[in-house]
Image: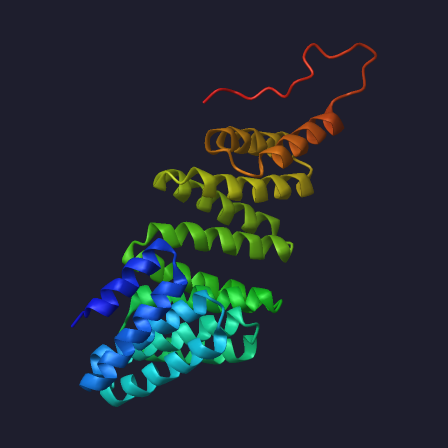
Length: 272
């Protein structure tokens, strides 16, 4: 049952007022304790833990999640247990405790595998891979990104497919596997185009421009940056000046020297 305190907490959370959200969710926890309703208590504690995590109060968030986990283990529901274990993994990763984060993610994966929770497994494998990227375990990260992609495809999660292809492409690029990186980044770009998410498309194109520059393909790099600048202008993205500078430098480096002045010193952007 959703109480007034829980509704108020949700309202303030959506508004981004974490202090008020924390106050109201704490009230919801107190009400659930007084009533002795375990499901309501677990829900209120989970919400309160999420707010503490957003506030980067990792100790309080951990306390809430651990109590939720204790309640859920008595009910033997692998899906809710896996969700809370995943939250604990995210919390530990945000706090920089990657070893503990990995342990929670793996335990969460075991829980959700038992119920064929494909959506949850896709998220968990991706989070595990990101933690491995942070600790420079790139071969493991690449393998887990691939697992995540399989689960995203099963549930048809286009947003997660786009993000994971982008992350996998960057992992391949860091490892020096240029061909694999290019394939993944192009897949990510195509998914973002399909979703109509142009700012994310621009982020992928910047990485592709880096890739093409490393490969010496300045024409493809310039095309990526031209398209990126079109998106920068449309959305007034903060990377706009840097993208202009990159494209100008790229053209300067690839244009043969000439004694005559250029016809137009401005960077020309093809209209959309």
